[in-house]
Each structure stands twice: as C-alpha cells, then as structure tokens.
Image (cartoon, rainbow, N blue to C red; front, side):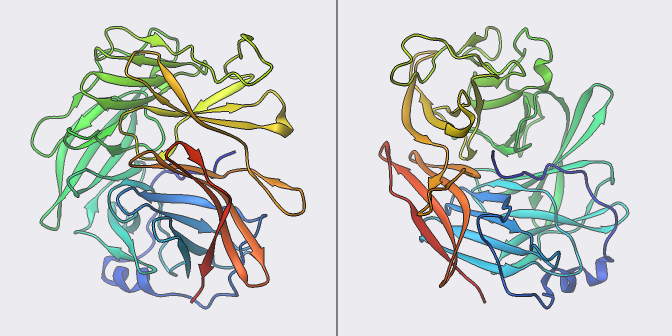
Length: 382
C-alpha cells in the first residue's frame, strides 16, 4: 500500500572520484515530465525540520526519471530531472536535507545531499564495502550520520559515522536487532545521536543498546523497534502485534487497543488478517504513533491514525479515513505515503494527479486532530 522504500545494498562502482562532482550535477536531456495516477512515487527521504519529502518518479517510456520535492510547509512541489552519470541510493530521515550516496570506487562511498535539484557531495569519501547496506539520518543537533549494516551470521553488525569538520568519523560498531524502516533515525528529543534497531550511536560515548531484551516472541529480532526515549520503546512483531516497554525491555506488554468502527461492537480484529499496523514516515518522537490498516473489506480499506496516551496501552484515535482520495470520476486512489511531522501534523499523500494545467500531488493534512479537505500541490517543472 505504501510507497516503496529503498533499503538496498550498496551498488557497484559507478564513477571515479575525480569526476564525481560533475557527474552529480550534470542533467541529461529529458522528455517532458509526466506524473499521473499510474506513476509510482518512491520515497527517498523526509526532512522533518522543513516538512519536506523527496520522491523519485520513473517515466513510463523507460527514459531518465525525475525527482519531485514536496514542500508541505510552503504548499508547493517542484520537479527536477534526475542527474545523469551517478545513481544515488539510500534514504534519510531527520531535520536536514535528504541524503543519499553514490559509489566513487570499489570501496569508496560518497555521501550526497539534495539541494536545488542536484545531489551535492557532503564530506570526504567514506571507505565502505560493496556488500554493506546503507542508512542515513540527521541527529537532532543537525549533524548527518551514515550507518552501514552487514550480516554477521544470524545478526546484523552496524557501524556508524558522523560528519565532523568534513570527515566521516567512526562512532563504533554494535550488533543490532529488530531494525525497522527506516534503518536509522534521529534519537528521540533529549537523547543524543541516532538509533538503528535496538542500538544507539552517540557523538561522544560508546554505542549501546537502549533496550536490554526483546519480547519473548519467536523471531523478535526480525521485528521493528521504535525508541521513545529513556526506557520506553515499541516493538512491532511478525505476529502483527504491537508491544510496549517502559523498563528497557525487562517487561513487554501487548497493545490490545483497537479502533473499533460503528456496528462492530466488541468483535476483536485479528492481527495480520483483519488489520496490520505500521509506522508513519518522518517524526518518531513521543507520543508514540502508529497506523492501523483495516483490511476486512479489501475494496473498502480504512486507515486509523492513533497516538499513545500517558498510561501503558492507552491509545487514542487521532483520525480515521478511507484509504485514499476519491476522484471526480469515482476512483479512490490509495495513499502512498503517510508522513508525520512535529506538533502532530500529518500528511497523507496519494501520488500524482494529471490535469490540463500540469501534474499535482494530491494530499490531505491532519492538524489539531482534524482531517483536512483534499489539496493539490501543483508541481513546478523547469
């Protein structure tokens, strides 16, 4: 249902370091920009500080794709041709420009950031094996991070780097579990560094785990963890259940709250069958937030956006909505992205709508606990 994420392995060598900067900014000759209800938007990153998101839009003719930046705070969007000569990969989240990377050699990785329609080199090249999986994030102090994951038997070894004075400085390595999507995110407000799985990397200290034990559940290490700060965390397991801890994993309590709809009474929904739970993209700070996807009637999907209360297991419904925006022709286009920003501001994005005046992004906002009317963010094309 959601837009595709790119937690992909590091790619093979593409360009030599001497020509990297030119390759990143050189734009090829593109066909006319096209984005409609059939276009797939792939989320490349979320700037939680500026309330922006960057998407990749392939072209149906197989030609070079485009990048579309949605500026939700400014109520506008803009498209740029994808730069030619160096494929970017990886995605980022946090209060900073979208980050990606490109190969500058067999073991050379160049981190780049998106600015004014181009990927610009950020810091010196970083030594990284081709087999690693790349994750990028900004901490809440405004520093960019690179987290590399490598399989080590049945576990995942994470190595983190922080940009300091133009150099990527190692902040240690740690075996991590329950890595979610995104694979790295800013630590919660009041905490330093970035979190990945159950691990925390900081600017000055040694890496550590913010929970000491996962739920006693088969395959718990393959679930998804979200840290809420201190000793509080959430775990979404393969059984479809959400569990919470307030004591760093000493005990875990399942969340039995369900957003029952009118006429359902006390009939329990079956996790993984009647509904599934997922995280919104963007802000992950407390209060905890999650999305209940009602799947009982496939053609009548519902989304329930909920946030946690002060007491364990106490959740409240923020808004409920059919899954998608109804077009004038009676077609309901499902939401491709559900984004959360600070102050409980949410954006639900379906994708592109093509009209005579050009393409637009179709969205609905949530603010002050209310779901706004559908909006179109016209996409400006150079």
